[in-house]
Image (cartoon, rainbow, N blue to C red; front, side, top):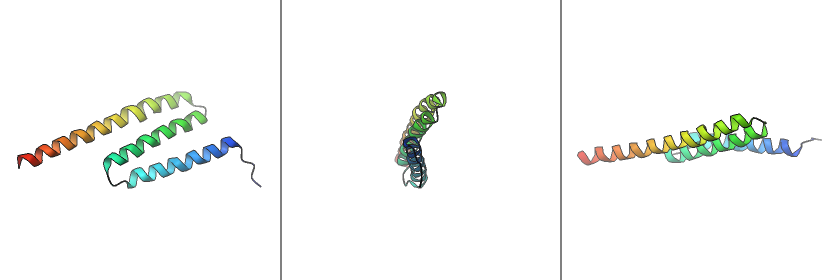
Length: 91
């Protein structure tokens, strides 16, 4: 019937999880959950790049996509939360 190797099955599973995480990130009710789903999506894409034999792209995605962008999003959300709290206290 189908001749699927183990690597092809792993690629299909990773692809399904990538689409699922992207959907969850878009439809998340809170911003922090959305950022966490995007971080997980980025880490899973690192695994996909390693499977596709692109280690340089995987390292770049791990450092910039997962590390730098996630921390930038989290710090921005925390700063917005502090600014919002200060604005409500002044009124």
